[in-house]
Image (cartoon, rainbow, N blue to C red):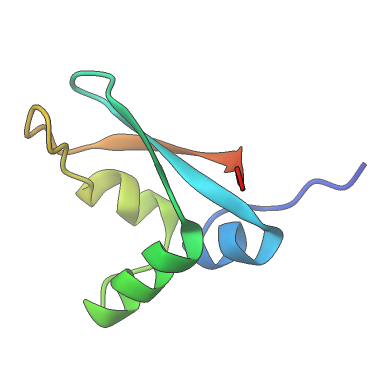
Length: 76
């Protein structure tokens, strides 16, 4: 079995995964399409690294800044 280094949104998209983003404040979980996230981050000229995304993510529910990003399968 091969392990892939998923350290950027590009890698999530390239490997065919979505992003599961969990708020560090309230625990709210959303699933985001990696390709759409990559396009949006590029449009904003924001870094594509997962560490940067985790630090900058802001919850729409509680307003907390900070999250955990993990991979999830694409549900078609």
